Length: 162
Image (tube, rainbow, N blue to C red; front, top):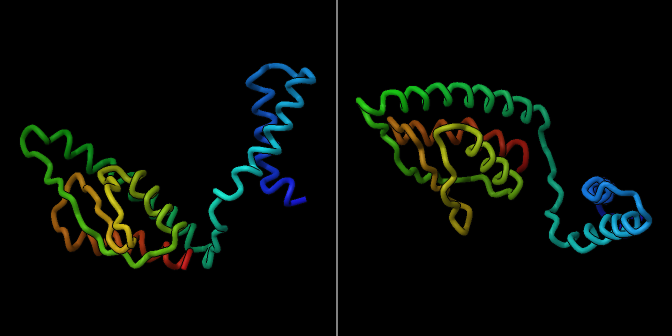
């Protein structure tokens, strides 16, 4: 059964979406929706990433809480930086952060975290995944920022995925 439906939820979703977009349950649309729901996951199965193995589920809750706090505080800091930009321009910079995290799922989560937290932009990841180039909107102390980034985000992701 798994060979025919490698992603059953995706198959059902595609089928339902096809019918919803066409606003019709005619036999032709039912047949095309079923074909789409069966063939698309089969053809895309080789592109699906390997399954993630979560080592410490409680660390996920702590990380989500920490990211939530950082989103709020970063919003306030960026707003303050924008409001005072006329008097004092922000000290933005690119920062090279050495990474110990190598798991692709952990790196994907890290990229999403940096996207969500205002004031940081994921700019580049080295081909060997050893260094991350991050743009920071307001940077006072580069060494302290790197240490904070590694302790707050990278270390928990390593606990979760490695």
